[in-house]
Image (cartoon, rainbow, N blue to C red; front, side, top):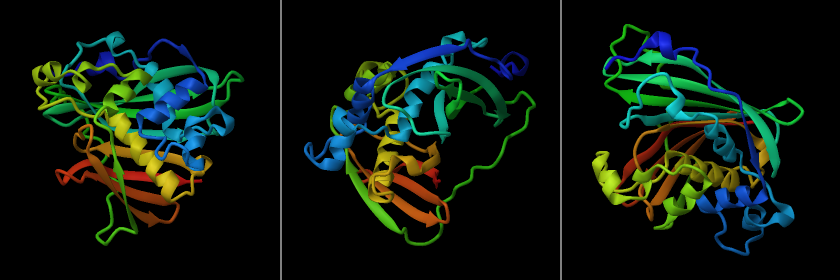
Length: 280
């Protein structure tokens, strides 16, 4: 069914608040693989309150809570998938806060066989200052062909040269079980029967879990663990990863940007592509 552009474009979700504490931050970090080795000083900064820092990708956790898809003025599409995601950091993320959020559908692109719905979520601190912004694209098969624009071409392509570095990150067999405790309880990430009914071969990693895994790897290995250096981070979800796989993350330095691709070592299959992390 073609998407109803008049109903969707400009739709604004109800303004919401979100409260999180240090335990929530630590749980998120564990969900994307932090804490190995457990007593490493750098890892303890992700898992111990004493010197707790917050990975910029944690911004996705409050951000996505502001988008209750059941409130959309169109029918839920169980085949819809997360196409790409971007965060922009306006100030360092505190380890505990109550924030207010406003989400609005800003673009709807017509890919003929699918529609792409772009939602922008602004998150502000208690003083009303903009803290971070999430921009997410939802790919909705079968809902294109409504006569709209196709939208911009995919950017951030990796250079045609050897990468400046490669990082391998193993994941746990129970990685999705950990990550889902941060709020994304979609059943096809944990239940084999639901995954099969939804057309997937097996439960697979949350896209935003992969997003965090890659973010942490670049911050730790390229930015020397300095979470404040990330200004913007965008990725395209180009394939599914499965719990227990190893991510091979290649990166290229490009001025203030770091271009990134991630693949499964075991299957030599894409996970993340067209990714760029901008340094402040």
